[in-house]
Amino acid sequence: MPYFKNSLGRLYVGDACKILSLLQNETCQAVIADPPYFQVLLREQWDNAWNAPEEYIKWTLEWVRLCRNVLRKNGLLFIFGQLGKREHLWLHTCSQLTREMQFHDMLIWDRVVGYNERSDSFTPQYEMILVLRQNSEIKPYFDKDAVRQPYSDETIRAYMRDKRYKDKAARMQHLCKGRYATNILRVPSLKGHSKEKVGHPAQKPVALLRQLIAASTRPGDYVLDPFFGSGSTGAAASQLGRRWIGIECNLAYAEMARKRLSDKQRTPQTQTVQQNPGSLCV
Ligand SMILES: C[S@@+](CC[C@H](N)C(=O)[O-])C[C@H]1O[C@@H](n2cnc3c(N)ncnc32)[C@H](O)[C@@H]1O
Image (tube, rainbow, N blue to C red; front, side, top):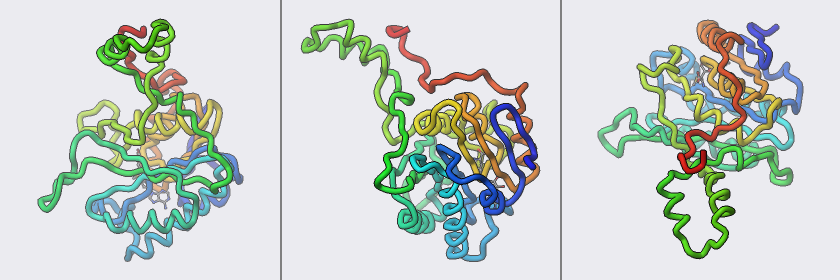
């Protein structure tokens, strides 16, 4: 029984592995997993549930295998990983996971501002998102046009001055589509005073999740998040008209997500992630 349901999604409260094993196989077009980091947030019980790194990796393999069952054959599995205090463990985890499933990409989430300052190296500013697919034979669904980024007016004017392009109207139309997003996703992390913050210590920005979902799913597809936290994946999926399934073991976080995702609170659907095109393209 879901803890909460609305017109687009449902949230289960409980252990990810237990609930994943009950879901129907090959139903989700994308899985977005932002799992515990392992002893990074020392005050959070959920980040300190393993005695040793090996135990954490064993558990990771267990939930990834279960997610794989639920993922469609042409789906993508996104897994957040954080550098900093546990850098070696994340690298070992990636290496194990790429033996388990087919490596597809490694995205960099550029948080714009540094965090977790360290005295012995550069200040960390990015997190990683490992992207896995089922196998090398089946091409995953990926819509690059869904995540184009607008050129600035200044760049458009500079390109339009290029004499090689005779058909100015066609050139303008092409430029107004924007450029393809790179695998470095620059989205500011949420600051304490941000209106989006709902109180989860590891809340991810909806703008970041929207890019992953817009590119890897179609409207109506299911997106699964087995570590739902405050429901950021559900919020992003709902805004894009995708269906979602969330799993969260902590009741207080599940309640945060419920409040955030109740139909009344939901922001209107927008099918695209493109924002703020320059005035030349309006
Ligand atoms: C990094 S946080 C996810 C934050 C989320 N992306 C957000 O934006 O709010 C990881 C979440 O996994 C949950 N969690 C930890 N172990 C779990 C388990 N075995 N089953 C389900 N959820 C679990 C934690 O309670 C925590 O909310």
